Length: 258
Length: 258
Image 1 (cartoon, rainbow over the protein chains, first blue to last red):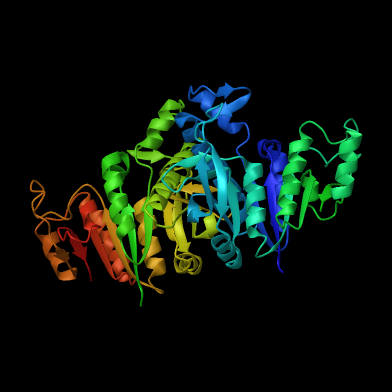
Image 2 (cartoon, each protein chain N blue to C red):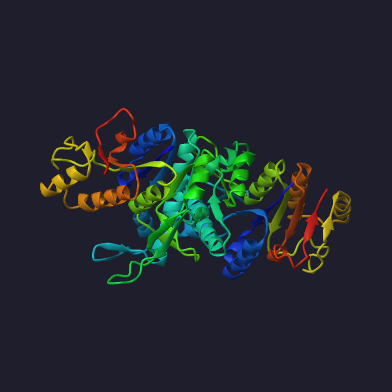
């Protein structure tokens, strides 16, 4: 089975010009089939403020109303996505920018209203692995921004971590997929105050052990739950680390397998 | 040879919600391989004003400075392109939105500074007919916005009419291409004050005759020069008309052949 790398970059990488340049150099040099997934970082919030659009929060969660969705479409699918594509092209990586609406690659539905109405937020239903595979076979590198659609003309704001894991799951029938979550930390840390105390390998046993020890807690808990969800759906491995993880010379990051 | 329709829609169609809906219905129903090309209409100017970015004009021509390019990227490649894509998907047309940077589909260079520095404006060097053909063969409908890139990381604002004709020319080696310029008039008019006085067919002889009679003048002159440029480079036919031209039941539009 051919390997496929799905790399998700976080807002902190996107927002730092120097870090982004370094990341794009590493990513472009990555051999084999690959897919990039990004959000829009703080730029969308800044643009909304600039346009006088209030960011609505309910219980600490952002609400995507019609005006916010317009800003997200402009910043994620326009400014951020197309600049990444142009920068990758300059590095001879044949990038193609997409939302989930493009080529109907990621189908979703508007999150149903329960306690909170999140607005135009999408929960993913499925990924068209055939069309994504066609793009990869043509030598293209899909670059997905954090947007999907409902198939009925409505674009939807969708969590970039989720998009990355859904693509990895969806592509696992055709490729040996590795999912890379690239963020500001070097990986899962044994000691939160020591940036170099990276747990290099976590499997199911180690995971349960770390849970008992209270090493995995707070924000890392849902992240790892998400990783094991992907692994349980045939994703080969999930890696968590900073941008040096993409650079093949570094091995200081966390690899997670079943 | 398989036929391919390249349809360019003007700003007046984009800006009118009702007209755009009608157009998208017609376009989605169009059989066979097809490509859509659009600019961003007045929305980019409105957004620039909203963001406090001055639109610089020199000798009546718009200058694309760095800030204007950001707005164009947000509006053309983001808001306009992705909403068209989502709307076409809702009509079961498998649309895929692109700039010239995506898949390196359209290569260009920044217009050299002579009398006027137009800023980040691109003059097209070539179209990658192979990659566009791959997308078409995969059953996709490319939707191009009016942007290209220089291959060195720089996005460039590029005239949508030019993008449409360059794609038509570039694809003519592989397809029998028809280029449709869809605007607010019904076609080339014998009498400018009579909207229905459409010249249904123009060939080289008729063109010279209309030139002598002064029927083709002002804004129509460069448009037709452009059409004959495309025809001389193996484009099968060029059609000029309003959105009803796309609707197969209407024949009140201008067809131009050599």
